[in-house]
Image 1 (tube, rainbow, N blue to C red):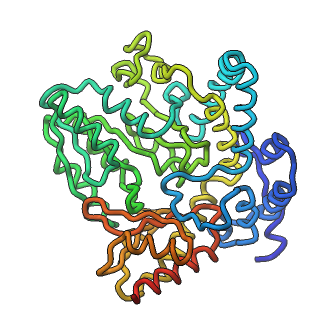
Image 2: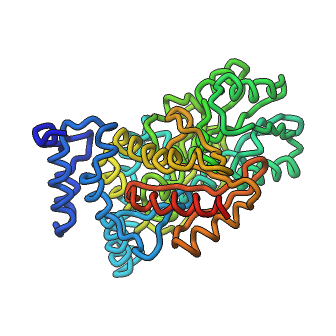
Image 3: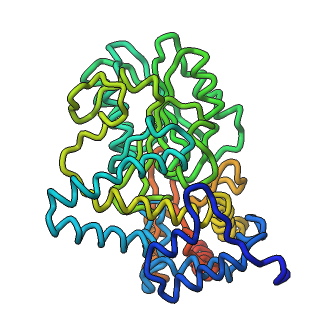
Amino acid sequence: MSVQNRRRFLKKAGAFSAFAFFTSVSNPGWSRNLEKALRDAEGIAPDELATEEDFWYYIQQSFTVSPGIINLNNGGVSPAPRTVQDAMKRFYDLSNEAPSYFMWRILDQGREPLRRNLAKAAGCSAEEVAINRNSSEGLETVIFGLPLKSGDEVVAAKQDYPNMINAYKQRQLRDGIKMVWINLDLPSEDEKYLVRKYVEAFTPKTKVVHLTHIINWNGQILPVRKIADEAHKRGIEVVVDGAHSFAHFDFKISDLDCDYFASSLHKWLFAPIGSGMMFVKKGKIKDLYPLFAAGDPKSEDIRKFEALGTRPFFIEQAIGKALEFHEMIGIERKEKRLHYLKNYWMEKVKDVPKVKLNTSLDPKWGCAIGNVGIEGKKPGELESFLFDKYKIHTVAIEWENIHGVRITPNVYTTPGNLDLLVDGIRKFAQV
């Protein structure tokens, strides 16, 4: 790659720019280096930049990850970059100078600009976005707020997230709805199969279908739009668990044509821990009851879902810095890098005897999250081996028909980190 092709990368993107990002904080050495790297990388295609380690080295310096542990469980909670951490601490200190004044009269005034910026990133109206604490809160607001009655059917998968499964089971117990569970054979690159599994479960009594955009156990991406189209033909509402998809790979909520969507911003947006977002299609807001009682539960205002009482405003407002950081990298470049890292280690172990990959290498069906199993071994054994011998932090998955260790790198992960992972998997497979 010529030096000439690596000049002046920095371009303004919507409301955000690297200039705004860097001038909003003090300018330490790591940020000056990153600023130069961004400029030097201008014009490089995202798929080429995905393998340009000089560039990603400076992205890595934006994080404060432990040098003693290789964290490959970013699928649980991602660390926030320095600017986000600094903003949260600064807002926390400000709050404690006079809490009721600085929280309610100063920091709370930033919620509407934040709502607009989240909506822009999500590709929807600001009047369809509520700010909360995580995807479980958003999705349970939907699950418990839908006006379902005894005999109404809901279609969901056994591979969905436990909090959502338990919420539907509670509605089944409390209200007499009927749950129809499908069992997905994963990983799959067969779109017709995945769509058919849901459609075959639909009946005239089906009122809701619950879809996990990217399944957390193994990183399987579902063809949400295709399933949503089939559901809407039958008058079925579509709930999407976007805990792992928002800010992970390139899409807009409008692309999915779902009725409800929720995500945890402390995953792939790199926002502070305990921050989330919920989307409700404008015409659906009125008939969805809020999880926490509002003055008018039948209001058409999305803000009725934010009646949480006193909450950590310092966390909420630091989401803005995470949005800036996300826009600075760019979603396409981010997606290409994450997919490259996942495939980097998977390609190196896929032909090792006894190794079984539980995730697709195709970018249509997976991105950063990968899952690997070893024949004759329990997932927990591999997880323990990787940590004890290599200080690599992963998570063992034993859920329904998915058995393996989930490996989730992030933008700060290096190929060197993954080379150690590969060495660990190879040696464990030989034991």
